[in-house]
Image (tube, rainbow over all chains, first blue to last red; front, side, top):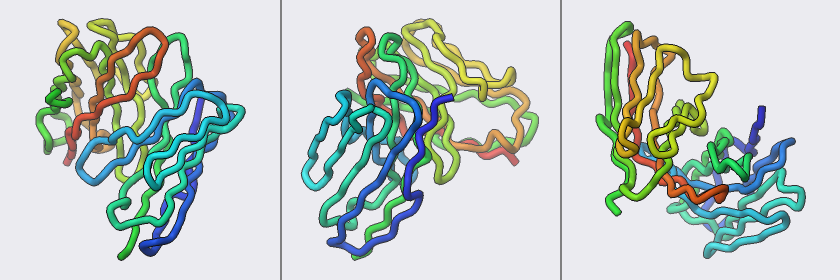
Amino acid sequence: TQLLEQSPQFLSIQEGENLTVYCNSSSVFSSLQWYRQEPGEGPVLLVTVVTGGEVKKLKRLTFQFGDARKDSSLHITAAQPGDTGLYLCAGGANYNQGGKLIFGQGTELSVKP
Amino acid sequence: DTGVSQDPRHKITKRGQNVTFRCDPISEHNRLYWYRQTLGQGPEFLTYFQNEAQLEKSRLLSDRFSAERPKGSFSTLEIQRTEQGDSAMYLCASSLGLGGVYSPLHFGNGTRLTVT
C-alpha cells in the first residue's frame, strides 16, 4: 500500500514567518501534486511536479520534488493570513495508467496577523 | 468552465436509510473520481471512471456503496443502509486524462453526509 506522510500535521505561526511542510513516502511516485483546501470547499491545485529534483516557484511558495521521487516539500516565505488552510500533497503512482491520486493526511496551517 | 458541481451540499439521514449523491463534472473531462474525507484528514480514494467505465474501486468501498456513470457524463454515488461511520465529506473530482499523463483534479465542494 502506498502511503504519503505529511509533517507537521498542524502549524500555527505569526504573519511574516517562514515555514516548510514535508511529504514523505517509501514508494516512488511518477508525479506529485500539492493542493490547498479551505473549510467547506474542495481542494484546489497549487502545483504539479514530475521530475526528480524539480523545483517550482509560485510567488512566495517553493515546491521541491526529491531526487528519488519519494518525497516533496513546500516552503512558504513570509507567510500571510491568507495562506491559512489545509495543505495536501497527492502522489500519482502508475504513470502508464494515469489513475488515482493518493493523498497525504494534510497539514493544517494557521497564520495569525 | 462552470466547474464540478455536487448535489446536495449537505445530507442528514438516519442510520439504515439509503442516500444518493450526484456529481456533474467539467463537461470535456473524461475522468471522474470519488473521494471521502473526514475532518482534518486528506481525501481517501473510493473509485474512478474513465468515460463510463469504472476502472478502479478501493477496498474502502464496501458492498453498500455503488457508483455509476451511465453515459460518461454525470455520476451518482449511492450508499445503502447507512451507518454512522459513513459520516464524512464526499468529494467528486474530474480531470482530462490524456494517456498516462497526470492532469490536475478539479474538485467539487463536496456533499457533507451526517448519519444520525
